[in-house]
Length: 280
Image 1: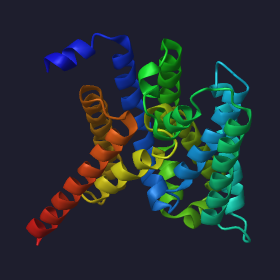
Image 2: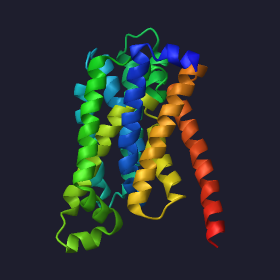
Image 3: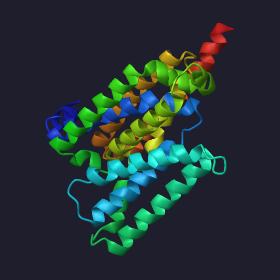
Image 4: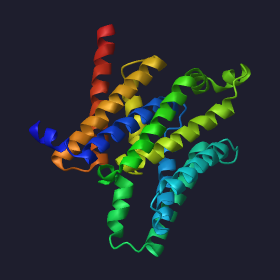
């Protein structure tokens, strides 16, 4: 505890915890929707696109990578949504096509054009979020806070519409809901979350932030609202615990958070089985 208190005196540690909690909260809110819509791997696909965009920004030596990464990731989210509705290219094929292409393109241009003396370290940090969460500036923290507030506000305001298009999109269309518009909104919000999460867990581990809390909560509850609330609480606890363990043990931040998420999922599975046993 004394070691943790000592580390908490450093601003970069406080920044990492604040950003980690906010990103975990935002990821969990729409994670339930993506799991139920069988579109869980959109996070994985967009994270690879974000890696490609970040590679472009690094080669161009841009100080603010968000100017390139955010627009390209949002554009890819829209493209994924449109392509996934194409009868010739199904959703999973579209995700695989765009994600693998972006990952390969990003690594290619980093090898061909990058002047970095530590290319392997740069790639590892981008893919797995090794220490980037601990090097956040105050401006990046404020940007994360603002975007997180926007994401949470959108989810709360449009909660009923998101619920409708999640469970029965055809019925919601028949009832007059503009399902395509809300699907587009969900895709754009997910793209924003992916960009924010790049610094936390890296592009290869982002899907864990979206999927594991939702799946864990589904082991315990059957109601959409309860699952969403439980998912948010679990995600925040796991992110905080993972960051603290990482700081104290010197382990990679992203991998540690995902390991804690997996442990929480195992506990929820056991609790879910016990709950059903008691109910019988």
